[in-house]
Length: 221
DNA sequence: CGCCAGGGCCATA
DNA sequence: TATGGCCATGGC
Image (tube, rainbow, N blue to C red):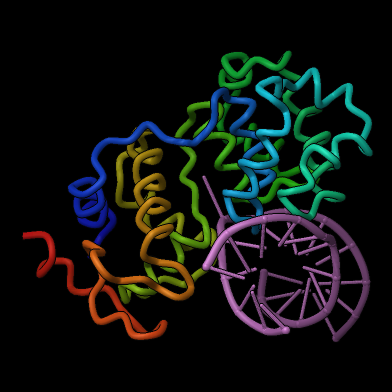
């Protein structure tokens, strides 16, 4: 199993996606913070509280106590309110303009983001890839779990998993975007902590968490 | 009732 | 550098 083949399998079922459930790049950034260890459905409730007026100007102006009320459904609201303020302050360096920000070198931007309180590796890469459109590969809990269930022996650290993909794939935004998108969509349905395997194109014999992915060769042609 | 969810910070060794 | 406790809501 290699990343190219894995992607072939995923794309065969989910196609070419241009993904991240948000209406604007800034909403991607907000979603990336709010979804930290949180069910996406709760993030949607929080974002809906802004009634379509979720802008960096609003978050900048909003007192923390009020911001907390907006994002309450997403949990961890005391810290996340601060994190949203911090990330928004970072974005302001580029006049709240993703095209301006994206002109900077990728590695410099990544270091900047990692220096923002509340932004770790996954959040940084999500912002770079899905908000700025830069080729930074995103690794999340689903990605690690998928590789584990596939029986792929990679040390489950962010760097090692990321390297497993990027060292063997072309450095392309659309490819990075689609791989992570397919993994999230597949895993939301079938690769939770307690897997639900009926109908999964890649799983078989899942019994109460001990399940493993079927040899993909036997599933996809 | 308990487990889980698209992490990250901070204290400690 | 590598663990462990902590943060909090809502769905099941």
